[in-house]
Length: 102
Image (cartoon, rainbow, N blue to C red; front, side):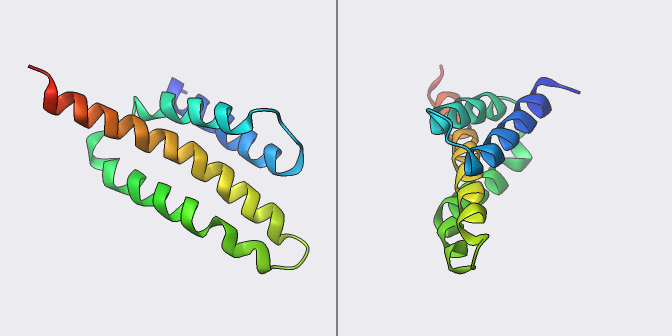
């Protein structure tokens, strides 16, 4: 198992646990984990990651309408959205660096 998968699994686990338990600075932990995972994303997956980040952050609150479990599902998706947003930010910064380097 490589670093990308380990950090990704830990990030998803924190996202799920963070929906049920109050974890201080959970967004920072998820964002940093996403930044680390973003270093290892191959170029073929860049667009897929960007779209995933946009969709998860935009539609996570949709599940609030589901009785009983909706708030938890929304929190999990929002937390995973923060994780994937960190990945997307790393991809964006890598692309900017690649364009600007001499």
